[in-house]
Length: 238
Image (cartoon, rainbow, N blue to C red; front, side, top):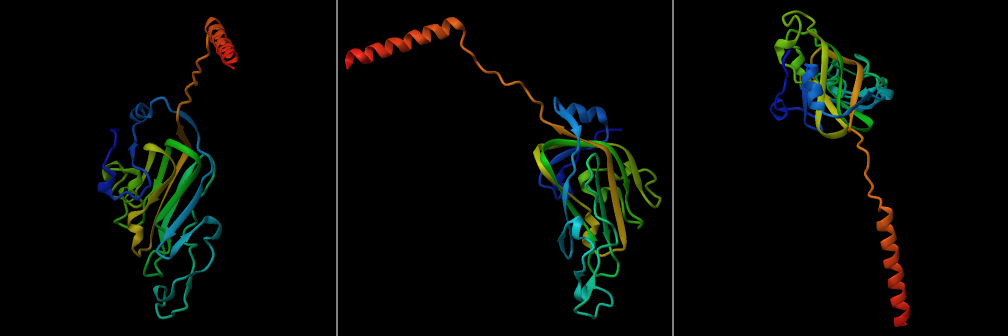
């Protein structure tokens, strides 16, 4: 496999930090440098669809869809986001579920997930398993955060399309927040996508030992004598 590196701006990546993605572990760890690995902690997440922003704790709460919801003639219509469950927030894995519920004109489900970690990290890696849609137009590259070329999806002409293998990303600057977006999810379609990064690890900055210059005994003695001399001069002047 070769390193996959694309211009994030060209892909329309909706993320708070630019990054480079890898499916070749050797290239990834070379880019990671002297960073320290540790298991990814539990994340807090915020999910966005056409009708607003919510968290996993309230995803089953009724949401006002009005004339956007079937039968499209009831201005008081309420809907539900239970079409796909929200992304789990378990420690040791990073995952996401995206979907659009067809009884609405616009996406009712999830098209953007923002993850917040308890501390800043340099990168993330693990074993990626992805299910990328039941429709003929769904593909892995529809989630630009992963920076996948369409040809790297296994069985690219079958349904569903999927990928299983190593994946990692290195951020340009340390961050505790990043966003993953499902590009087709901004439009109404009865479709879904999900991913899971198992055995997920984060890259932490290497902890270099702090060097403190301690005066040598002879230097400290000379410094003390100098202070005594200054005190004596001040007393004579007084």
